[in-house]
Image (cartoon, rainbow, N blue to C red):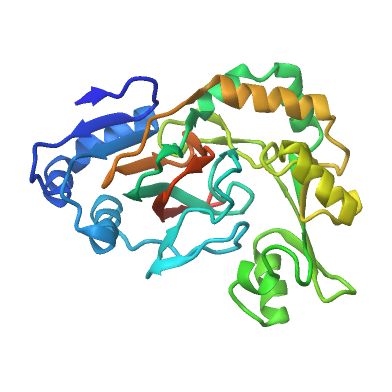
Length: 316
């Protein structure tokens, strides 16, 4: 076992021909312990068996089937079953660090990434220890969020723009959407253009279910309009008023988060960020409540498969 230079993940490098499934069966307890300490594990050089083998890794390591991608926020394509492509954004765009589904009432606790085809240049999945992110944030900034009720996300699903509500909620039934939102602490309002506006208020800090540590687990930075590339921000604001943006974040009481506060939060994530270059058949396992992930811009045919497992409900 060796740690790859400049990354949070602990790397396990296999002898040629070693089955990843055999390795997980033999070392699962140790691997899970390391995952809970470090937040990410990289399995490199193993025989995987393609997408079917990747699906089997999820089942073997988590002891359950991959989860369906629900309450979607980004475009993905299904590869097979509950194995998806990573976010289908243009190759020249960065995807900022975030914790998967931290805007939801429940979320997957374990994430899996599988390198089918690496990029020619860049294309890493950077990681950031969100315990370190929390420590890097000015205590007054953290306390302001807590004092004002956490953070709020407003999503506007516009007809003919972005991810449609039908895809986000995996249904065409409006009543089913409203019922889903009611059970998940989301306020849903239908727009006059046939779209949907949802509002949810969530905590900024959660307690890790294994270690009991406090972690900065939220989408407040990722979904704030100023975290978009400047040209994307300008384009969206030419089309929409701020209250109608596809996504934007606020304090829990609905107040505006100052741009300089969000810039400070972005700097805290970047200060904790590490990276590695993908190699074909790499498998990255991430504790979603210990490590945030993102995506570098890239050139070439990069194809990374993604799966999620072990749903976590803090209310339970």
